[in-house]
Image (cartoon, rainbow, N blue to C red; front, side, top):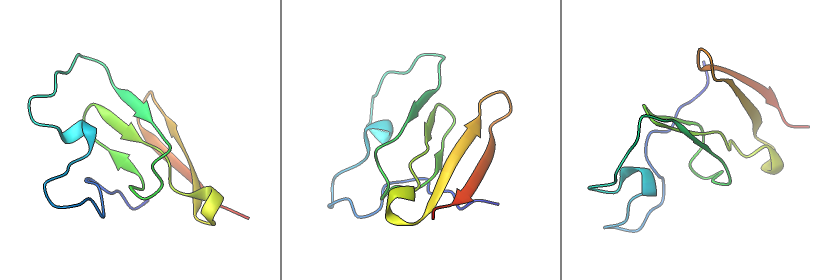
Length: 76
């Protein structure tokens, strides 16, 4: 089972990731994003962060949207 990070690591006190901003408006859609390797895999109810740092020697992550199955391979 892949490790899932649910909130941002290393944020300064009083800061939060955009998807946890108080009062943030949402629609009935899921947003898939990347370019946040420090966050790691994030599987929220309406947000999915897939950057798991393959460029830094960690894992490359893919997600099958239909059932949210996660697939990972080690970086080489």
